[in-house]
Amino acid sequence: MQAGLLSTYQHPVRNRNGLAWALSALLMAFYLLLYFGKENYDAKDALTRYAHDPLNLLIVKLGWPTGDNGSLWVFNKWYLYAALYTLGMAIGGYFMLKKHGNSRYHRLRTYSLVSVQAILGFMLPIALDFAHRPAWYFSYFFPLKYDLFFPYNLDHMQATVAAWFIFGSFVGIPTLVYFKGKRAYCSWICGCGGLAETFGDPWRHLSSKSDRSWRIEQFSVYTVMFLAFAMLGMVLADGLSAPDSPIHGWANHYKEWYSLAIGAVFSGVLGTGLYPLMGTRVWCRFGCPMAAMLGLIQKFGRFRITAKKDMCISCGNCSTYCEMGIDVRAYAMAGKDIKRSSCVGCGMCAHVCPRGVLKLETSKDVGPHGEIQVWTLDL
Ligand code: SF4
Ligand code: SF4
Ligand code: SF4
Image (tube, rainbow, N blue to C red; front, side, top):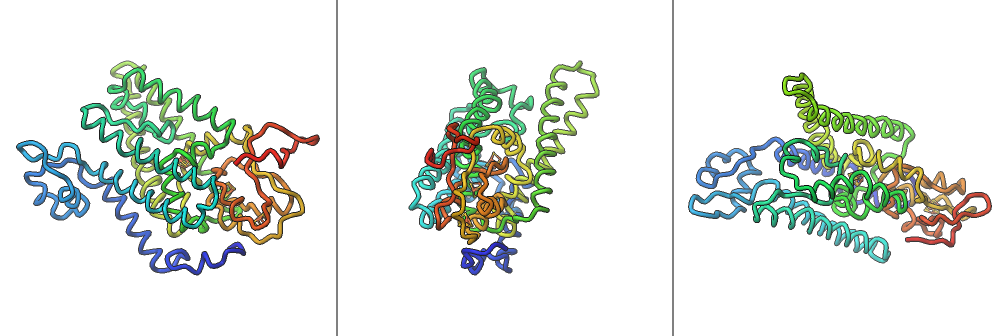
């Protein structure tokens, strides 16, 4: 455990006590129900059919009948989930800003995260569904949205929508990250990161800063990235192969396995369920293939955190508050700039530093020895 901000650990639910374990179990149970509960809804007999399925029962009670047969044609569990998710982000964002809202950077990125989720992650997909159009989530890109190029999506994808996702996945977001760092997506746009930054803020200090967890992180996150791109290759090969090719069977098994193990269990059940025990970025650190891909770009890009030399008093606040498990203090003590692929640019390390040692920088201006000038401030 890092020194500094020790009161963080004395709060109930924030120090891995029994309550935190119970909350973690509750979150995991919720995600298990969500992913493995029933899909279809018919108000006529839903109340009896789902009598033993609390989440679906809740949906039926919250949903409204439309049409003569009372079918809940628009209000399914994924929209209820999106509503709860957005609400959780809005409430979490409110409390996060009560603590850190004196920073313009945190105000703007929190407004951005909650707005993107509310508009692109909640309202627009429901509006599209009402209009009998495919309900796209325009803020998610490959490889985070791993099924984007699965046939059941491609079959309904118009050319303009396909262009948006292909451009965003392979050109737009990577370019943005090259110039502005991963923060442009992970701390301003992405809904998964958004939940971590708002609802998950009370547990951000629980991420391990040990070398061991860093080694595990590097192994696991690049493995998942490899698996995601292997799946894309398989989907393409499947599409191009002859109808009787065995590739169809392999591709289907692989897609099912990935959807279950990575898409549901890793990112949802564990990624969010472990917030109260392992911090808020378990999925972002150890599993997200987009984190790995964007991290490699960030490594060669302009973003870095500069540390003023001989200013650090080793209080440890920065490391304590780093949700990505980066031991920021070690860099600051050594007077070294931080250029880590895992950094999501949340800016919390700079915000909680009592000496103003750290700055988030993206300028290409460099000093005589290649270092970023500290006056090229870019928050
Ligand atoms: S690491 Fe992945 S899931 Fe996390 S915020 Fe970034 S893109 Fe989203
Ligand atoms: S190093 Fe700083 S900006 Fe990067 S993830 Fe950690 S706290 Fe956020
Ligand atoms: S960089 Fe700032 S917050 Fe981090 S240990 Fe040094 S003085 Fe403390």
